[in-house]
Length: 254
Length: 249
Image (cartoon, rainbow over all chains, first blue to last red; front, side):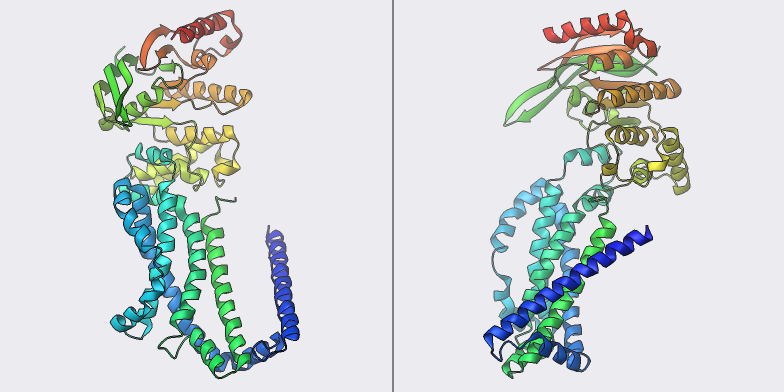
């Protein structure tokens, strides 16, 4: 058993290493072809990353990580219960559907100026904006998963005289959890994109700011060090979500 | 013997596309304590509607339905086994079986003991950590039965429980139901479209007609529960007679 896990783990890290070699190889090749200071070879970017990681990047990365993680948590806590409720209650779903579909396609980032005015230039306005964007993705996915749940499952606990809370706890939540985690993974990608955007306005903190700041001072090696750091942050968050899925949704691929 | 289950002029209507459809009409049925009964009929004859009424899941009916003198909602000592969806794929065998006891608010130590007992009885204890997807069809249905029996029901309702199983597993499961019925003496109502199954398991056999569903024939079946009956001429004669009944309905 243990050796099997170890084997799986080594094969997985081998794949990761191969992927990294491929990525950095293509980057190196592209840098050689283009010969422009705007795309330094990966060696320079990595050297710069090593040099300034502790002194400059960690601080910015910590702020960004805080913004993304808090946003994802708030969005999940709001969207999952609401999504499950709407998926379970047809009437509420029908009333809310037009509202959701009218507001969902509006790109929320256009409200950034308003949030900056209303909520200030601190973390709150950024977190609210990221939360709002991710909220919709989780809400719609969760609601659809709950809506499509086979009614037989619900009948089966109802015949045990389960309370509403128990129906959510034993049926709706676990049944929709794989979909919720998928929506979180999609949401994470969006959250990072929005993060970058909000960090380029009215802030001097965050990895987005660091990247733009390096760019405007033409320090391309630092800029790419920041991009690598941001990519790593996303990668670690993805791994965390994958881990959650392996632990909590074992039943999907037992 | 006193009747455990009494149904008097039961009628169930439902609406589909604003049209009123009568699923069941004038259904009358009596089952004494500890009887096993089978109900056969063409598909769409409202068999499942009848079960949902008995299980207390459908309260929109007219007529009288009494379980031990109580309405299905009051009674709550009925277990329902469905063909599919009986088990939650996201719960292990153990968690599936204990769920009912847990919802009933029984103390942890007691429900763990009862769960273990019933799993051992049905030979499922070694499979307790598996998820339904890791079980065969027969094992899954066995777990569904364990999950119902752990609640110590008075009435066991089964809606075509074995129709997706292969012939051998199916007979194995029929034997299991028979054994459990003989041991526990619960009242069983089995819905099936398999005539041999109806004859093997039902002391009483009810034949239903379709649209609206009603009981057109009721017969006593002395062959029920006789392991050797499956090969006897009487068994096949009864089955043939029921078959012609169904054709005419």
